[in-house]
Image (cartoon, rainbow, N blue to C red; front, top):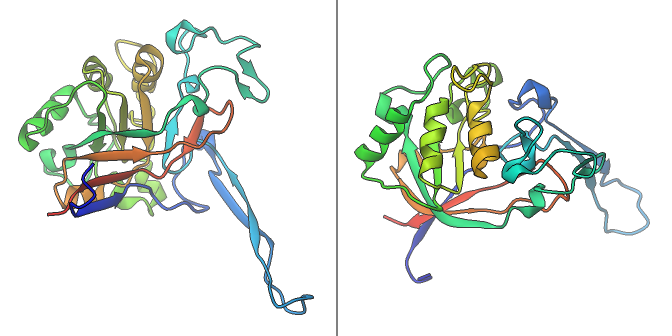
Length: 264
């Protein structure tokens, strides 16, 4: 890496707070409260403050571990879900601590710009053709090991929880196409990568991308990204960096991803 070349870092995490958008199954998402406070009358001039964080793994900007989803009670690689694997203290296989630091080539597919809309709403899922056309317009090629981020435009309304939860997502065929390219990670600026509440006509399941990507292909999913600055600067290729927390046996982890690209 050439450290003499000026670069621009893009923060891809959405702010975390109580009341932020969260999938109903993971509510309330995040609660933070002060445990110790700075107060007058202490025995010395130095005082301290600290707090407690109560947070669902799958709230805010986060990555899904491979143990997050199963098909017919089997995880990625055919790992059976049994009492030895799924315990009260978490998973003994494919937990989030097994995800390595992610430092990879990243690409942005700005589907909202391609469709010429502010944001993709529910009822019009992003298809394979949308991804292919976005890549063609941007002059971007994708391949093995890449991180592919898809902009729906919903990240711009993160502070409007009601409308954010109405955002659209990927169709099953879009996820299958990305899996066929052998990418390593996908992500989007919506609640669940897939469109929430839609049952795939072929697989007969909701959240088909979760089944296709996590269970069938071992591809990680990052949700609730902020891709607005990348899109504003039309930064379609970059170095992607994300470091999941090593929470033993957890099904997901909060992340603060960044994209680093040459300035100008």
